[in-house]
Image 1 (tube, rainbow, N blue to C red):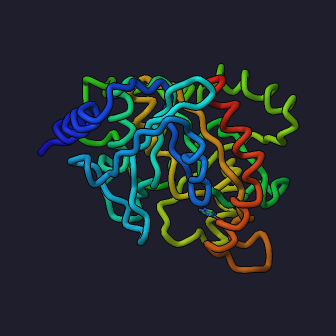
Image 2 (image 1 turned 120 degrees about the vertical axis):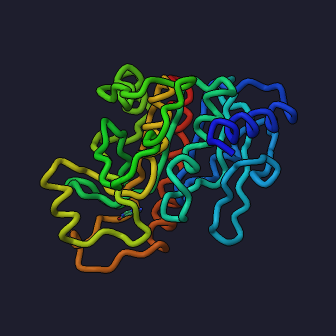
Length: 272
Ligand code: HPA
């Protein structure tokens, strides 16, 4: 089956379950998934009911496509993100984004947990993505171009839509949510980076490092969507502090900033 056939099959399966048209798409990062529960009037479709959808491999996490409303807008959210390090292809991990685009989504909100490279950051800092460096060595747009979504050589000079960032920043300030801006570097994972890699990323202009977001942003922008991204700096990146990194720290910090993060996501939905 071609990737286009898989996308179309998934769209049909979702349309058979609901006729709601989502305007906004939401993909939530490690430890940040609880926001899905805040969506009102939910239609929950397990990934396993959607033919062609990749399934998250993390044990105990059954992925689901959730349609719901928030702040008066219809939102399509993924409960359970698919990562490249799980062994799926770039086309597979971005399939949900393309499905969202076909269902009507115009703006995609991407969130992630990331390690702080910028020495002004600390665990708990929220960083709005201004740009990214794709250091994964991979790209979801490689292969036959899907002309129905966008052109062969898409422009990425405004990948994280500046106009939306300019609307969001004053709202975050008024709401008292400390929000920094910066460049996200994607490394494939699943291991955390080495201290030398982090020094390298800092030298080339990176502010945060993580294992997601970039493929989805590329596929979304290719399809003409507006994109917003926010990183929760859950830990300082490798080598910054004299201590090892752990997934427990990532989840713990994400939990600690939940209030600000939730409020920020609501503002992103308002501007998106
Ligand atoms: N590196 C990469 N991914 C991450 C990190 C990190 O330090 N923290 C949370 N996700």
